[in-house]
Every structure is written in C-alpha cells, then in structure tokens.
Length: 283
Ligand code: C2E
Ligand code: MG
Ligand code: MG
Ligand code: MG
Image 1 (cartoon, rainbow, N blue to C red):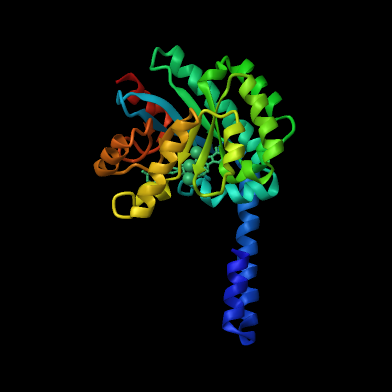
Image 2 (image 1 turned 90 degrees about the vertical axis):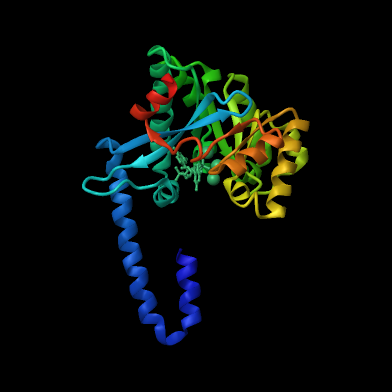
C-alpha cells in the first residue's frame, strides 16, 4: 500500500507532496490503531474461527473443515484476515495468533468427534512467519498432545510461495511434520511458481487449486487449461487435489468431469461459526 501511495504521489507530481504526506500520516495512524487492537485481541478473546466444508466429489460427503480466522473488535464489524493478517505477519503477532488458531482448531476437531459428529479433518493455514519458526514441529506436537487431536485429523496448509522461498529448508520442515502423521497441503497452488523437481520431493498429500483459476473456469480457456493441468499433475504425482472457490453448478460439473477429488466454496457452504457447522456435520 505504501508502494501504491508512493507511485500515486509520483504520478501526481511534486506539487502534491503535501497531499502524499498527509495520506501517509493517516495511513500510519490507522496502522498503529490496528496494531494496538490486534495486540489486545488475543487477551480479550476477540478472535473466532469460522469453518468451511471440504467436500469429496465422488460421495458428496464433507471430509474436512478449513479453519478461517475472523476478528470481532469491540463495537465493530467482523474483520476478515486479508485486513489484519499482513500486519500481524509484519509485527510478529501472527506467531501467538497462529498458535491460538492451531490449538482452537484441534480442540474443535476433538469436540466434534466426541459429540458423535462426523469425524472430519480440520485444516489450518500457516503463515510465512509461522512456517519459518524453528520450533513449529514441537508446537504442533504439543498442541496435538494437549488437545487429544490425532495427527491424521490435522491438515496444515502452506502456500506455494512460502514453500518456494526457501525450498530446501521447507522440505526439511515438511518432512518433520509429515513424519508426525500430519496431513500437508499446498494452498493457492498455481499462483506462485513451483519447480516440478521440488514438488516431486515435497512430502505433501494435497494440492489446492487457487480460486482465481476456478472463478473464470467456464469462460476462460486458459484458466480451464490450468485447472486441468494441475489436476493431471497432482494425480500423476500421487497427490489429491481440491478446488477452492467453487460457486456454481457449472464449475462443479466441469471439475467432476476432470476428476477433481474435493471441492470447497460458497456453492456448498460459506465459512460458518463453529456452532453452525455442527449442524452440517450432523446431517
Ligand atoms: P485461503 O486459505 O486460500 O482461504 C480461502 C479463502 O477463500 C477464504 O477467505 C474463504 O472465505 C474464501 N472463499 C471460500 N470459498 C469461496 C467462494 O466460493 N468464493 C469466494 N469468492 N471466496 C471463497 P478468508 O476467510 O477471507 O481468508 C483469506 C485468506 O486469509 C486465506 O486464504 C488464508 O490465506 C488467510 N487466513 C485465513 N485464516 C488464517 C489463519 O488462521 N492463519 C493464517 N496464517 N492465515 C489465515
Ligand atoms: Mg487455506
Ligand atoms: Mg487458498
Ligand atoms: Mg486463496
């Protein structure tokens, strides 16, 4: 955003430097407010996990739930992760927040199972900073032990770009997590650039096709070709593949014809608070 403001300022010319400075100032204030709010949010218990169903195409059954973080600041509307995760990441607050997410999601998985509901896997997103923490595997092991969640009931989603930033280190970390029995998937696949050599070596189970490719699948031949290629690639490598952002029946039909394994998107369910998800898992 700072870059965008800078670019705009340059475009407007020297005479507008005053305007640019004022805009930056407002931005900095907003940022500080946001940062302060985020710092207090954990203590005040303002975070909440929503869950979105992951559906197996062949059976139509819910096989997983992706945990998606929401922030309910006092007196304000719910804030989506796109509006606070980047700052949490920059300030390092993502580390304690991410730990809360992991613990909460694992505890929820156990609560559903113990309530006799469908025993689904819970998927948790890991940020770049979290994935680089040396003690990530120890934290995961500790949270699994504390909550009683089985490793195979936890899926960790790491984005392609985070993994490809330092592929050697990432491979080692993925291997450690995989040895623990945790399910691993690459999120937003297709938006970064994975080397196929690495992809073959990553001890992962699932590729998640980014929803930007699914959105125009029906009208855009290039996106359709990418989706087909990713599904074929995943299957050739013995991986399963899930399409994100499925909103229409036409997309569903297309993905079925291409033998995509799982689907996730508004067509099936929006992300919902845990209490509402229980009803879906009972059905
Ligand atoms: P993501 O992991 O790729 O999650 C999928 C996003 O797509 C979610 O946005 C979800 O609400 C949205 N989505 C699902 N189905 C549809 C659909 O049919 N149409 C459209 N238009 N959108 C759909 P959300 O919840 O705003 O999360 C955005 C991103 O924030 C996530 O992308 C993930 O990268 C990040 N995030 C969410 N929760 C966490 C968390 O606990 N920790 C970390 N580190 N990142 C998180
Ligand atoms: Mg995800
Ligand atoms: Mg994704
Ligand atoms: Mg995404």
